[in-house]
Length: 477
Image 1 (cartoon, rainbow, N blue to C red):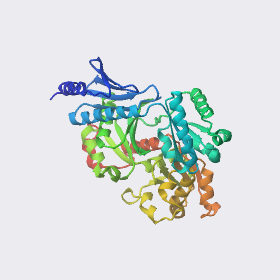
Image 2: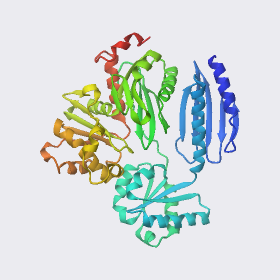
Image 3: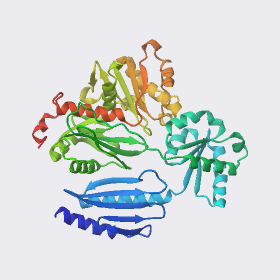
Image 4: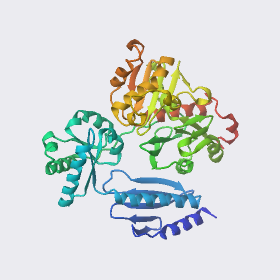
């Protein structure tokens, strides 16, 4: 079957997927819309060297697409599965209408009562608002899909921390007189005022290009955050960045990486090498990620043979450590702790005497393996959900490594860590201050991770480090 024939079969099948939840609008030969009251699913075809399909869900309410991925149409079953996922997300978007407001107090009891009154008022006033309430311990996890966060007066002192962690949310401290009297009218007015003031701002993300790199490269990073998998990709040419994007999935399939790579190589055939960054245990190009049932898969071998380019596979914490050190060479011996939001435990990367240390079969820094031996003041899952709890969690996870290695610098990537000084004060309970490393926060946009992966790839491309020499015959075909 030719690529064109597969495209025609796929397009015909898509048009046959009728459902009362949406209407199908055939905009052109290459563009089909699936329209609901709340969002629109776009199917766009591109006829390049290969047949490419882009699936997108957009909503007037959302600043960014709710769903986006693109792929080469080469496997009909896989293509149908991706379309089905888009439709499921489109239907779910219909459930997420209106402004979602989350109230929080110490226990969640008083705010739950207030939320009930506010939902009643919203219904009476014809407002498309949905109010819910959680105790503070659940705030940061529950806030991810909310538009407005309202803190009760008794936890108003946590407003600064909440704003630091939830940078993209509207966060309001409820005035004491409003909360004490359950003044629904004033509360609704506060929300309206803040919504009116909110302006869409575009996040500036520094590119990964380095003028010393004399090859076109790409980085594909798997980020496990907020119970979802984010597949970020960036490309850098000789003089400028060439590509940037992200795909968000509930589940991870290695075919998702192939979809990204297919499109990258079609658009930018000059790319010579790709670094893939992933959580899990990485050794010699093989990946073990038990949460998605990936065990000892030879990712580098499969992709090198398929695409004829140079590939490297990096652990996320190790890539972050290399990236930070490459731009702070005066930091001395480095311990980098990497802990994205929504994970109970993170991982660590090491740079000692100017060289990354991966350990036997790249096992160094796998903190999860000794997590159960540590004693905590409360359940470690609960600790991982608040800025206060995360300080204790990180303290006890990095403490054994600090005592063993004696690093000069501890660089931390963690959304919930709002103030490195709090971590320092916590560590001082166990280590004399003169022996403590300097503690710094890494960039919240994964810049060190991307740059570090680029450094590791560059060294392989230029023969500075040996890597999977058994694949040399397949590279640069």
